Length: 236
Ligand SMILES: [Zn+2]
Image 1 (cartoon, rainbow, N blue to C red):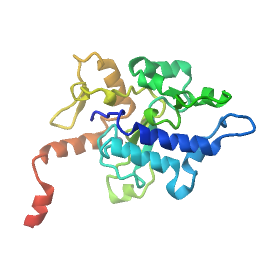
Image 2 (cartoon, rainbow, N blue to C red; image 1 turned 180 degrees about the vertical axis):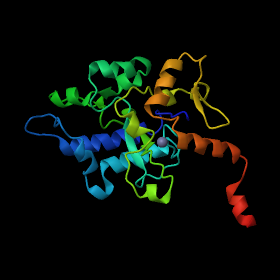
Image 3 (cartoon, rainbow, N blue to C red; image 1 turned 90 degrees about the horizontal axis):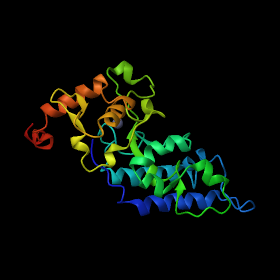
Image 4 (cartoon, rainbow, N blue to C red; image 1 turned 60 degrees about the horizontal axis):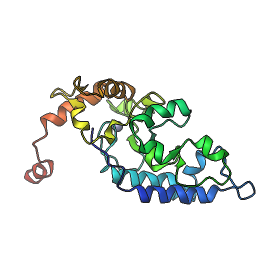
């Protein structure tokens, strides 16, 4: 897992959310619609939706790695947007995340509260479309055989299995590599000496990062770590 610095790219991310909110503003009622999740994927047009624009900003922010499993992502069919505070969260759920990560309190308002306000100011953006509450995650699909590759699954790790389960964004901590650690055999473990041990273990379970195929891939990464793939190709 790699440290993600949300201070970078925030302006670009917030510009997208602000442009989107401008498009859905209900002038007669001086507020935003309560249910707008789908329109983020459709406006201003499907080919270059706000969802797609946000995906690219988040990928740039994360050096094109999945926030959970570190798979390389392009944003073309392999990327989903993970909501740190789940879309359906209430005040109590949100507090779990906001207690440890103040920026999730400072910059974000629960969408349902935001949309019921008249003329809400935009210093806190609705959590379902706010840069600070979003990270890029892979779809967690791992075809094992050709036959399996043809079957549509919902994904074995990362965003999908996590769903609304608790997963504190420990990748926002600069010392994440001392909290969640990897073994040479591809295992992933929470450091028992870390003050975040319980949360790290919870995150690994929620995103199913111990999934067998993922562990095999990590073991392979470790074995191949010193091989310069591009150089090997030249020598063929
Ligand atoms: Zn992933």
